[in-house]
Image (cartoon, rainbow, N blue to C red; front, side, top):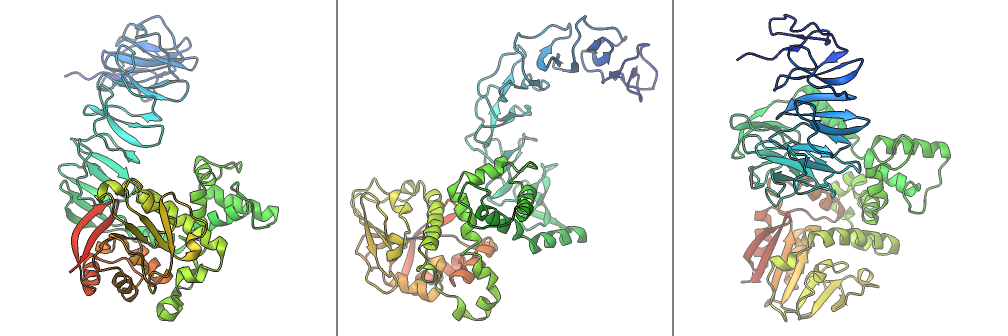
Length: 528
């Protein structure tokens, strides 16, 4: 098969594959020939397309022209874009702020409001849109990013290919696509199903001949099979290892930089720190480097997200304040367990700090426990007791049940809380009698405490009750850093499944049911 001519080395005319000049015309610039034998060029008259003999394919002129794909080419005139056929005719009267090239008889375009669509060869948009971004079609599917920032696949007709949304997404390659969720990158099939048995990576490549190179969350490169199994490890260079360690060494810099900026008034909150203008400018420069400010010291979209979210600001102050101190004192707390003071008792006398702690814990709980009412079937009329339930986020998820709901926590935590239909019961749940109920919840409570405190609390629950423990299972040291945080902060830990089973067994509880849900495990317990 004969190949079409290509641009010359100087880029002003075309030559055949053997280097012979194919026409006598010379232009300001030329691009390669595409089917149907037309090439974009520019001369003093403007941009247009030429035939193989160098003659114009039509009389029109444009500011820019591009190659033909599926018989259509994108052109631009006065910042308005559209497509033409091989005779220079517009395919429709519609104009766009930008046009891509047709792939699989569909083309990405952008309107003058910044919204993306896909159009057909007649210029008419398919259903869906506007999107924040829309990519080319491949293997009958394209990636679109919604206005909410989440990505999904659509078909050639604009319908969702599957019901799963992702933080980032790639087109399909031989029926497999790269996808990223809140836990990391993985491969999915055409139904949106994960192919790696729930394992996530920091980086992944597409599969070629059934294998792909991936980078684990701890920085190791390995080759995996399509079924998710590990095939072989790829050694890293000394330079990569040094760079990784260097990042760890100063890993606290960005978080403390965020804290200082909040306290100095770079967000709408009232400034607490009084610093000089020169020092403030240095702090602003640090915010520029971590992406929260532009070079003119205005908030970036990332900075706006932080500044306009009370939950995020609270989390910064929480993790760099009361939760940071135990890490600073880590050596002492590891070598002398006496110094692992009761985190909540220690801060109980500081009302502002206690309010901050429980606002943050509640912000996490509100998100994490959403929908739990649909996961755990509880009979109407049951008395539900939430031990250490903070501000009551979990109990609010069970507000459709007719029985009593009782929130148990320290008096300083419950002070001022009002939740319709929820009774407040302040007490020390380790040493004082608990209210009587049918169902008790311990949601992210036992990881705060060592085995002795945890068994004491479990023993304090009436024997006839059903107990639901909701916590993480630390298999493969998946939650190693969090487990160390719990040890330094409260003396607790993130337990493995065997450790959970041993803990429950030590106080005569058996696991009636185990539910994996929302990155947590729900243990349904009954006394033997």
